[in-house]
Image (cartoon, rainbow, N blue to C red):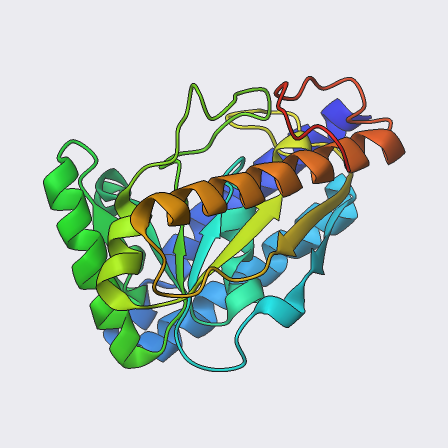
Length: 260
């Protein structure tokens, strides 16, 4: 049943994505708000596919840690494409720091440019940091939340930070902008694995954690960020495995924080 659901979902998801890129082309002639409206329509139907075909939903915890107004940085664990499809639902009008290669995808890259993301060249550390800092300063003027994945890429649930360490770009952005960081843990990789055809039913949890306020030394920022995100992410995965038989057998990283 899970295979059949995944098969149907994948056909609809990739088909709808291709169709949407074409249907929404005319919106590129209008202001960014029109493109955003079209993007949210696309994401709404993806949400319906997830819920009614795959049986996959999500829950948000720790909303009280999100600032009521002003700019902030969300430093998120990145396990799956799933969380990138929920950013507008979670943050309204966020910008995301992503790899420059995505801007070269036909049609899709044009939309990314229109909604104003922060692309970085991962082959050049110096250029990446400069792009991150410049982008953060630009977004600060528009009060748009910034989402960054500190490990730089999607990381499978069984891979530790020793293999995929946190990168220093977020610390540079933090120290150059005085913007608070809100850590976000999640367990999406158990249900929608990296490059996986199979998608499993269940409930993904996004959890916001207490903010890391401006002014801390760089080393303390990185340690606090990694400790909080990894500990809570592992706890969310342990929790999901204990209540959902569909993900119970999936191996997760053997971390020091393996408790709820």
